[in-house]
Length: 339
Image (cartoon, rainbow, N blue to C red):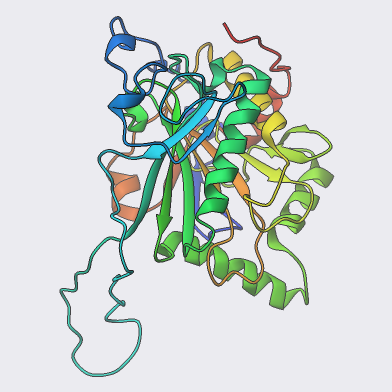
């Protein structure tokens, strides 16, 4: 029986406990499936354009007026936004600098932009149901909307699928948050890229991680001309994946790589688990102030629940070692046709 192992994520410095002795327990999870009657009530389906705020972006191969059918990818403001447009008013951390008694209870307006990017006009419960061409169009939409908000301090594009992953709508879509500040976790990653560049006199943290992973071949799931798909060294939960462009590219919005391998990796995951799992996916791109960065995409299937240990300590607990994940997923081609 393998002993528990403590690992440190090179990008964030966060620690995770690998507990492989628990890895052979069976998984049970709710797949992302379409429920009866959901199409008729879905505001994201084609034909329901009047149910959403006016669109900010749409791909219309045959032309047509805004907010009408005929689109393949569409972006609209979130009807229930987490952020409100306006002048940035985020408060400073009262303990970040200075002397004397700080104001301990600080508040401000949560300003920024919050959009929904609809992946397909058809009612699909999972992004894995898209064929390669439509998946590419969806990712192009992520990039276009990220570029539209390039003046934000931080752009966070993410996908929630399945109730266990926090999705409130069944129809597959992404959400974009254009923040007026850089969240602490992302700032921490930015600082580690800078520290590595200084320590190595010019090196890129993620370039060097990928080079080492390819050399070892223990956690590489797949490689193509544009990107590398990894089971991250310090994955905090089972079957996490990370997509990294092979070229040094700080900005996701300015890149053209990765969609094909990401699609293939998600299909490998679906095949291995027998169904599309509840899942969170996000794009990490260079935030404001990042002199040295390398964008990447993280995929986190929601197969286990956070309990008191994880929530109380901030440590992840992963019962499936990434080496096992890479070995299993590399056996699947991921060549699926959408229904």
